[in-house]
Length: 279
Image 1 (spheres, rainbow, N blue to C red):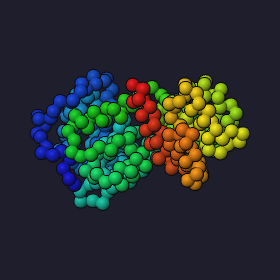
Image 2 (tube, helix red, strand yellow; image 1 turned 60 degrees about the vertical axis):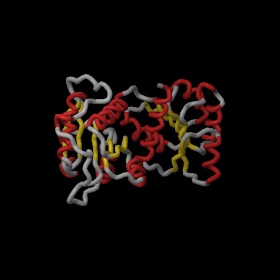
Image 3 (spheres, rainbow, N blue to C red; image 1 turned 45 degrees about the vertical axis):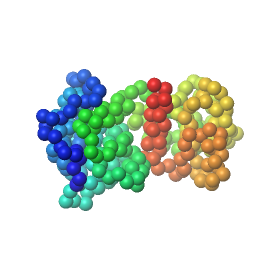
Image 4 (tube, one colour; image 1 turned 120 degrees about the vertical axis):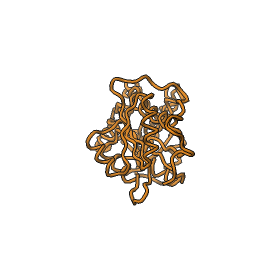
């Protein structure tokens, strides 16, 4: 495997963080580093003390799975390739998306292919970090991922006349610290919208009485909600339908049946962008 840090320094040459690290906590967050580069893991472990983080390391995926089963970490740093083995980090990422979807996973890899980045996003990775990076740069990204998860809960309003879809989205999004309000009757939409004041709106395209497209138009016509992120769900993939939802002001479009990791990634990305734009 390619070296993670170009011209690796000795342990006493580790540079300080580019910004002030957070104060140490009485119960530090747990970071699991999954990488066969033991020197890299040592660099990160030493540097992490200044950031109030406790680091465990696993040189291969089997060791990582045992560590996660024994004591699930708060955040994971995962390489994609491992020397002298066919192990693939994507396999673990897919398992984590199902079994531990609440744990942010940061990919840290020498791979720089667009296909790898897209696959990581589809499987729910929180961040894709490109090697080489210094330990402070790595830990800054790790800390940001932890803080995003600990930040105030965001409100998500889901409008769909299918109760199974509503139950599924609540099941998928609540473990990520999101307050999810579901609505099966679009005629109550405006009252619920004003009561919930969501940070993200998810709409089905076809619903009785009022379509998602009509609801999106109503939202965009009100200045209070003109910047509210709107994500559409639909089984329709015709070009005309997709063009129509974006014409009325949609920010994103996901086709049914829902790919769980893709939905989670897109929702979190939209919320993160909204938070960044408002800060």
